[in-house]
Image 1 (tube, each protein chain N blue to C red):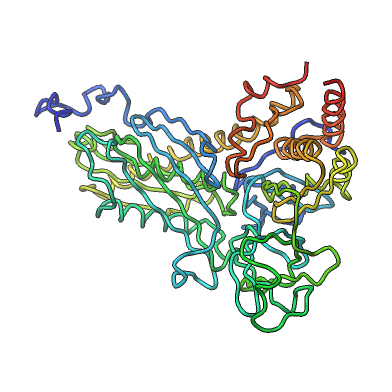
Image 2: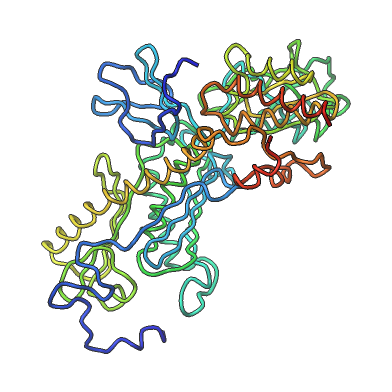
Length: 229
Length: 286
């Protein structure tokens, strides 16, 4: 990471942030010619834009997001999917990977099934639609699900997927991260447990600099210890 | 009401030197302690000790509003429940909402409505729960102060925190932050809540009588006090989140305590994980 200090500055809602002439980015607002933080979070100033990266908060769906959801209800032509957000997300039968007759939805997926899907659209009233017409979208079978705070997802993935790639490489697990904070892991039991711990490690220390290196060290030591045992 | 029998009828609530029953001067606050993020299951939480008051606040949301007909298609609802525990007062309080707590819930939710960016979350609700564990006058102010910290802890976007304090009149003198005896035997109590950055008043109530000059004096005292309380709220939030940073700096053992593989449902998994630095050390690397 490019930061000099060890600690990122934490701001609270209403705090004045940024130098004059900067633009308000996500997590901030302009009032009376000054920029203020709208959230509790970590201050970031980049390219003349001030933004606040949230530390906590709910997942709010955006079009294109990859999410992991659970089917909670069914209709003759759609499923209702819980995507860990304040808004219910319907998946229409025409957006599923299968060719479904009206009333045949239950032959493909049932309440309780977990799916990987994408957010197709979100309108101004926050009506969400999901799609599974995608190569990687499918019904989840096997593996395990893990939930992290949605605000920590960018750190779990890392820059250009560096963190996720590292964890995948060192644990030989298949990992799929949903933007809504749900993570699917598949691998042998030992490796999955290790990957879970690595992800928890990232989540706990999300504000730290040099996190990728710390995770590499964590995983290598854990593997070394396992071999010794 | 046994606890007030020891007070003689003609007791002076404030003596000629301007010292009150508990030794404070007219412009002094009771000791305040604020803790952020004290509850695991809530999205955000805070605990406030304010003199003899002990108040917990928890925040959930934004989440789907139920029942559906309450949903507002254009913005989020801000709902609040203020509740006093049966053991919070000397005589057992009958549990459940009463006229007083319904009123306080309403004014508190309206106070927060003014600062939350409701338009960002149409059709949802932000739920605030305030539980008074021990009451000693000024619980709505303590509750508001706690709830503001809990809202920030939950990551709810808002214009600013809300800070609250009461002033009143005892023995003919306008005083800040009345305690229980002063509230019971004084002439007036006037709680208020402001948005510290802009000075907007989001809650203002009065019990008893104050002249216009006295009211102005009371407002000035409260506004001045909210600045001090705001600093404590800010400190509580920063302390909560720099804790994790301190851990990194002192190079805590890299591995979180190893959780034994278990068949427990995922919601229990967390309980086995590391919580305190102490149990984190158990399984740490040599």
